[in-house]
Amino acid sequence: MEEPNKRIPVTILTGFLGSGKTTLINYVLKASHGKRVAVIENEFGEIAVDSDLIVDAGDEIFETQNGCICCRVRGDLVRILHELVEKKQGKFDMILLETTGLADPGPVVQDAFQIDAIVTMVDSKHFQMHLDSEELQKQIAFADRLVLNKLDLIPDEQEQNTLQAKLSAINPSAEIIKSQFGKVPLDEILDVRGFDLEKVLEREPDFMHDSVPCDEQGCDNDGHNHNHNRHDVSVTSVGISAPGELDFDLLNSWVQSLLAANGQNIYRMKGILNVKGEQDRFVFQGVHMMFDGQQDRAWRPDEDRTNKLVFIGKQLDREQLTNSFKACIVAS
Image 1 (cartoon, helix red, strand yellow):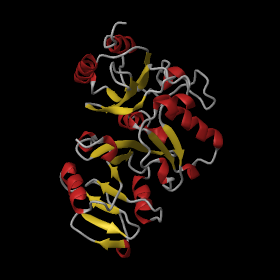
Image 2: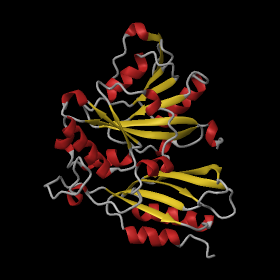
Image 3: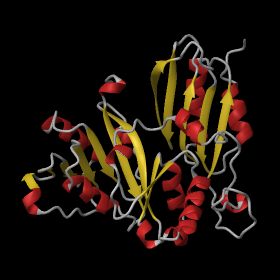
Image 4: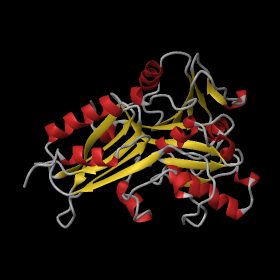
């Protein structure tokens, strides 16, 4: 496997039908943004790129005048990824992968690729009517970035704040980006280096505390509890903060057993870990049965080497997760 900083970052774009994914993709393919992006759209979608914008047409891969590369996947995703690297080596720096629903992103985390971020487009006008959908809850829970699109259709600021509060109740770690007509500053969704727990804690100091479903919490636009009748949101988050050094073998076994037993209910997990004998932080992120971990920067001399993890999913047992993780800590 290549060094982490040599692998090509992949941004996964998801969202409900009509949320604005295709509009965003067209913006990337046509705008003069100066970024070298390879856009991959799955076989269910349809990108309407003007013929005079196409520089080099091919069977599945073509280049646009702004330097972007567009691919339409009619077969195996892994094959098209490697074909991109072989045919267009040096012509792009990052990949934007559009999915219908949220396909398992595991296949892209191999060889030359790594997940940079998962971006979920949210239709602000029709979000409420789909909130009961487990698929929508998953898409929100997976996300590193939530693009709140079509805000021109709900100009009322209080309504916008209420919507943001509902999104944060499902996924408190995701950054929310406001958007109209699918236009988003690309440096806020592409090559953003995924999940940064330290930045999340700066923004949300209570992030590691217990999280409860939105209908129990009664979230409102001011962030306080109100006993209003809410949709039943089954997705919750569990944060763990524990000092100590971790035995890497025990940690590896814990992750494997955890995913085998409860991987389908853990939509996303992320963290920073202190492994015994290592001077570098170990950072990881997981999506369902996929786990990707690597050494990060060195711990600073004055830095608190506390292990910090977050799990987002359904039917999460806080006590069981915490106790089983702490069993990996080396006795002092």
